[in-house]
Image (cartoon, rainbow, N blue to C red; front, side):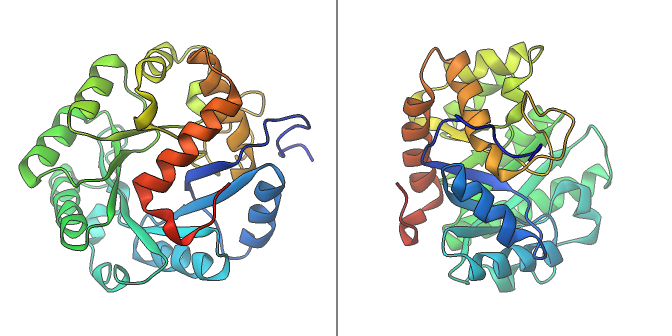
Length: 263
């Protein structure tokens, strides 16, 4: 019980645009989230093997779609085999991909090369691009400018402030907010969320990471989307119901979720 969204949480419908699911536990995780009002999910790959798993989960659940990609942490391993997944009907996005200069688990030249290659795949396929950027804003925007910004680009788990948000919005990107928006000290994220135009706003869990208040410090679950949405509503001086309606419509547009029945 301790990790589920509390009774009385807003009922949605919500779309979790970014979650990491495991094949062994996805049935129970998805069922719990449906009970909390989550109507659709984008399961994210961070390397080729995990991307295949995301596709398998999406094949098992009609309300789950897959994003296939190579995370900057895994960039040193390259992207061989990733293109083979891009034509599958379950796949709606390339990613997550991008740059992470905070941890530098892969050399920065490898990160930049693999990020650029995946932008190219998004262009070739017309799929949405899901971008991870941490401590690397200038290079992230420079590579997007150099390769061309895909028509549908999502900056997932947005951690910047208003200046970074404005740069992202200027290139037509969506901003996706995670449980960080519920953290009291995340003032820059609060300001960015408050300023984000309604038609560019998305919500995610990034489960099993970044559980929102009051569950911070515990493993996150996709069932916690309503808590993230409620925190987002608070900083926007809105209501959870309004945020659910806006972000669900945006998610369907951003990820082309026509194959799903949402709401």
